[in-house]
Length: 119
Image (cartoon, rainbow, N blue to C red):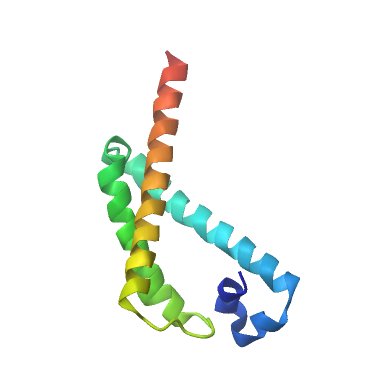
């Protein structure tokens, strides 16, 4: 969690104890919610995102991987900057694809549930 907080605080994050652990957890939750909300807003405008959650959730996960790994983290104050390795990239990509699948599937199921409740 301190590594996540270091995106804002840099090296000082590791000297902050429980406070920066809590900040890192909060930042992780906020980023996750924002990323999920972006998909949800896009899905309201493009219903195919609801209809094909596996395809579009996986693609969204790849997009999140690219944006976070090649834009957000490099531009942040994160310390130390992660050294790229093939195994690290593969694990991070897999985690982001899984996250995209969870977001897309959850929103798709919520939409189905809302339709069923109306009937």
